[in-house]
Image 1 (cartoon, one colour):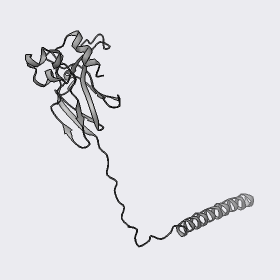
Image 2 (cartoon, rainbow, N blue to C red):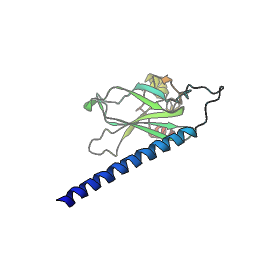
Image 3 (tube, one colour):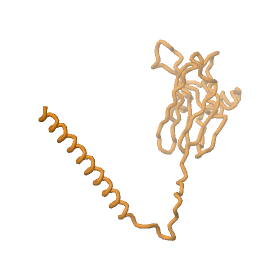
Image 4 (tube, rainbow, N blue to C red):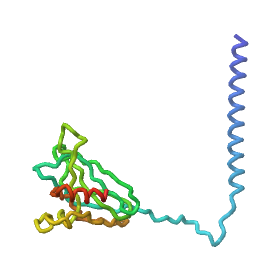
Length: 184
């Protein structure tokens, strides 16, 4: 029994010594670090200066589809200067999706389209609605000629919302869609 008490006392003493040594080392280390920091010069400001944050711009508009619902799909934006593509998923109106969209993008010039997956049995099949002259008015005069089916450049600026970028042109012939897809 005496050996057990002595051993317990020895272990407790070792733990206390280790704890004290640890605190002394940490305290001494912190003091040493604090001593090595040079004082502020009079010309140096004591207040931190904030670096302005670079924010994205926002593009918004209507989504359209030649039906009484909007199928799920993606909103795709391609930066025409860098060829970088950004994608935002859209769940469709049957799942509660809105008839409009908002898309935060870095500064740049973009072409946009809504890629709709209308065939629920084949999600790899889609049709696209583009932002072009036809989409702006949906009038026959703009939608009939090939010139109405050319992607419109959308300029995105930091902190600015670009509105009325409606992704509504689903009314094009095969030659016109090829021209539109060249922007992507």
